[in-house]
Each structure stands twice: as structure tokens, then as C-alpha cells.
Image (cartoon, rainbow, N blue to C red; front, top):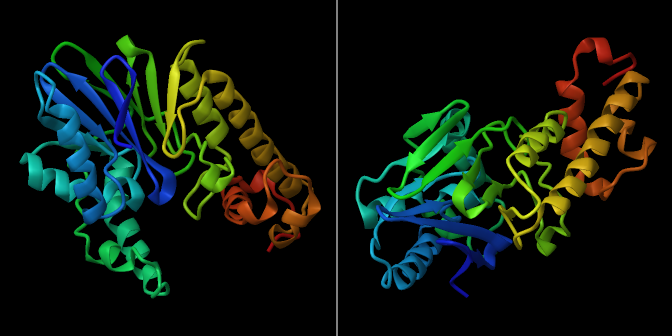
Length: 290
């Protein structure tokens, strides 16, 4: 479908593979690309869409890339954008930049076990290019007639999540801290590198960057409003507090999923429970734990 303008000079393209979003933010210096898709061939398709959109713009070039976190479906197109637009800066949180290469190599290894996956070869042939412009808390990027803010609200989906705020357009790009996609039934990505005990507080920071009319773009799926994010924050908060309660009562981690009611399907929460138990200080855990 290509890029759709959701606010003044903010365009989102939603791609079938992973139902992932790539966003463009335009200024009079050029375009900022937020996330770059999951392989070099996929990214070349994104570049084609960027060029079709940019042909009618006063400043049609891409002047920078932002990765909302290190996962391959958001970073494996970095090299293509470098090839097409020169030595442009690639921005990410410092933790995400550090983890992009090892996270990508792990994914390539996982694809070894998926010989019939139609994307296997293109993922494994992709050259991983981590971000080279990093920050720890927040940074502002100058696009000429507008500023774009990159904010690390804390850990959640990963340890290096960032959100992109476009203040004059009242848009926040939330990456995978917010999940809308029907491909996952709207379940947040509680992966093996998530931080479920931090995630609700990180979303509180994100909500503090929004107002009643703010458009929030998740990493996957359709744009949402503040109320959607509040509801998802509360559900993730239930996950975190349920983990805390179970651990405090001494329920073993391998029994925790069956010992409580959860706001999401149990099969989606195996990593969340294990990671949550690991995150809790010893003072909040009782024996027997395994």
C-alpha cells in the first residue's frame, strides 16, 4: 500500500511480513526513516516506496535512520539505506546498538531450523549494520524546520527501546513497546529479552509524552490513540504484578503460568514469567523456586 500520511509530514507504511511499520518524518532538510524492515530485499522494497513518496517533496533525500530497538525486523534494512543514501547516521539507544549484531546473529541461527520458510535465505544473507549514533536518555534531531525527539523511556519489549516524538505533529512512534497487530492478536511481544517488571513504568513515561489527541504508531499494526495505550499498559501491569505475587508466595517459576489468571494467553507469557522471576530481587522471592 505504500506510505500514508497520518499527520503533517509523517507517513507510515505497513508491510505484510510481520505486519511491521516503517515511518517517515519529513523536514526541510529531508526525511528521517524510523525502522528499516527485516532483510535487504524487504528494505529495497521500502526504498522504492520512499522514492515514490519523496519524488514530490522539496527535500526528497533520506538524511537519517532510527531503530526503535535491536530486533531484526526493525534493523536488517539499515545497510540498504546506507547503500542508497550514503553515509547517513543510524540512531538507536546505546543498548540497542550494542545488541543489534548478536541479536541478529541469533535470528540467523534460528532460521537454520526453518528450511521451508520463504524468507530464510534473505534473512541469512543480510549484512547486519548496527546504529552508530547512540544516546542514553534522550536526544533531539534537527530536520530543519522541525525537531524530532528520541526518548528512552525505560526497558520493556527490550533493554534498548526508544520512542520517537514529533511534537509539532502530535505523533509518537512507540516501536514494540505498543502492540496492535492482529497477526499477534494484539498481544505484546514478551520475548526472551523482555523486561516485564519494567514495562508498565516505561509505558507511563510514554503516556506522559502524549495528550488526548496524540496519534501513537506501534511497531506492528495500525496507529492507536492514548486510550489504547492506557489499556495495554494496565494489562502489562497485571502481568507484572501477578508475577510479583506468585514469586512472593513462593510459587515455583515452572508452575506459575498454571497458578494464576492472566490477561493474555498463557502460551504467550512463558518468557515473561521467566524473565519476571529473574528480575525480582531476592527479597521479593521465597523458596521453593526453581
